[in-house]
Length: 629
Image 1 (cartoon, one colour):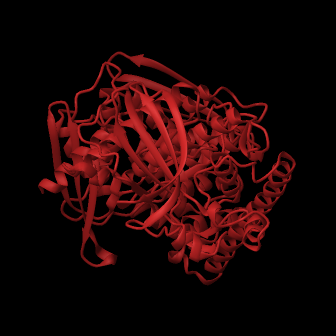
Image 2 (cartoon, rainbow, N blue to C red):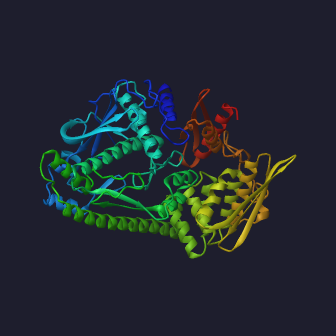
Image 3 (cartoon, rainbow, N blue to C red):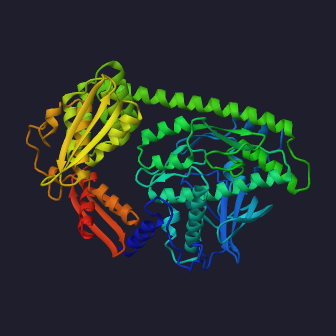
């Protein structure tokens, strides 16, 4: 139990309510709020990658100095082996980058004997590396950057999820990781304040990479590790781009331009806080230009930098290999390996290869998902479908003019049992504008929204943001004895109908949520009269709930309420740990929830829930009781 609690305490402190690192070092901190290290070792060189990664490009060490910090980033050095114009070089140039399928290497840019063995920064093995030493002051401003090629030995190989877990250890490695989390916290905060598009969401585990592309982390711990490495590599790449400019080297830069209609990054970040995944994708598609390689520093919009380059992944990206050759030649006092004209030609060629590869991957993925969805619809094997296939199955039904009864029943059952991801529910909202949904599915939507009205605004905003609905209005008035009455309306653009709903509740926010829920029920196809009672569409008697399960009347959004409480109090969100017992078709779920509260650590356990969602809701309800709500 003590190990579990120490891990939870650490995880709960990693982020604050805005999703920014907030872990405090055990050492004293200067007035700048930048932590000092007690015992970080400059000799401790570690790698952080996915558990299946074998082509290990980069490692880092971090040590405190009198001025602040020294970060060293060591990069694998295939440039010492792969010579320009050689057979190996031309094959790598033709491919441009290693092709991955999930965690598998489909096509390696370099032979595996090089990328996964001879050049890879394997723990315990001596390797030649390009070492970027970056001196930072107490405010994490760069004081100096030096580049050298030295023999290095990695001491520890870690995974992304190891970073916050091992940061709880009271040893040199634990201190190094705590310092790494704190320094990356400061670097991230600095980039955000400078206008960078640095966004991540702990609830959805979505974050944006350096080019503003959406990525998914496996867990909160995984996200912490990714962001630590991302911040260190962004810093190293930025400094090497500046170094190349100062040395007047022919170099390949990463350039990123926004589309003409792109708003200021600060406005984008603010709007992203309220978007779901599909709306976020749509927003990014509208504003984001394509990042390309160029022989000149043209600026990077997502990073808000005047110059940027790729240098830290030479085992898997050809551009990084070329840039490493340029750096190595300069450090050796030799002419550049590639002249300016050749750099220009390489940029053009690599951009074309990568653009075509992106099209091919997208087409191949979409075709495979659509085929699996179509086969499942034909054969009735819907339980085998993942979320992407379910999305495509709904889209296929909408494009064919009607939803099969089997699909409607399956979706309704899933909604009532363990629930469905928002991206699946969102595409149902889209489908409701094109076809009439089966009655059983409309009933499930009404049960969901009227039992959890706080979720309705999400779907209302999705309909508006995706241009399915317009002319949204909200009116409210205070009722002396009853509270507040709220009236909401929207225009359903598919048929030009104005939908409206109202609700009365003691609190205005509750009335607005319930009115929005009734409105979305109508949008999905329910008659207005059926939404006035919470269970009017469900005429059958519900089965008895197992011990510990939440009754329908209890299904407020307890998890949402505790998250809102944490946001208002500016404390970290609770950590949830869910386990199950029993057969898969009749499992019971237990959730342990832990909250780092100003009044002390709160830890509760909710047992016997029929679904994971109910277990988390029950634990959240107990936490609300613990904090007096």
